[in-house]
Image: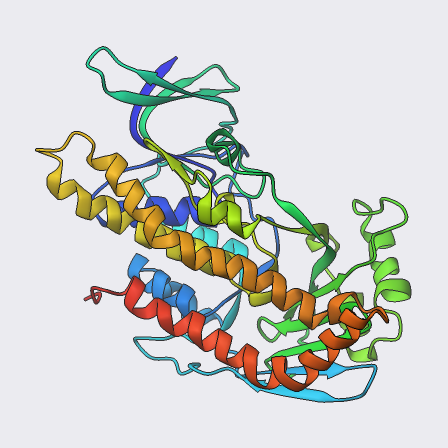
Length: 417
């Protein structure tokens, strides 16, 4: 079966749905190809910083989520080796029309909020991409041909790869495979049916080369993580009970009872164990991020480690700016047959350097926060000294404000009514 579409988005995650909604807001309909049978809500929660809320406001769904989640006012970082505690206030947490602060939200709730605003037939489930080709038609125009596993062939003027870290679209463009940071993360969602009774906020713990944290989502749920340089000696990632035992007895051994109690309340279905991957920053800065009518967004363009909390946030930025570039370029559609390709070029130029620095900054933030590996080598000792005296007190707060505040004018160039 042959289908013709103007814009096809590969991947129905945050980047894919947000891009489809952003395009809808400016008058374009996109077809979203999702390989799964339903919305994929991998990962239980994510933290949305002010730049993400600017984007959600532009998309028109911020008011759906803000009432469900309280802003986080502060973060406490406890160095278990020295006993020192660093307190960081989150600037810009006021809840007004411009800024929704920093909030930890359910990933599923965000996906559903995005999907609800799309036409019923916008998402084509069970659509696994198996190949991509570029073809020239008889009128000399170019299209991208997508072959799906079920035999469907789709001709599209524009293809936007939002298909995650191991993106098939990114590979077709020639972008390099993501690199392993050398760190792994286990994540989970703790559920307290009767309420946990803890203050709303973020608590992190440092010990050697391990960093752990707990973020309250609401009065009954807490998102937690452990990031470490230690890999598992055996593959227990698919066995929730053994993975929880590994966290309690090995990865987070000696951590405060308050944190270990959170781990004990974990919903087993929420557990995950993954390597922390990132794309080489120079590959984003100088690589082939678009070609003709094909480009990428979200993790497909800029997979990054979670240390600045900007993976999902930057994907939402991508969506709004890509749609704006297409909308602006459409003004010349009557006289310029290459307007779509020029729109993608403008999008890449607008995003390339910002996300390059985000990827590099996230990697550096992770390396510093985990003490350069936690060993006794001179660089690890220097990293811990730099972290405790400069990074947490001065650099991280300013970095956050720079990331968050710069996005306001970038995203909200036009106020929403």
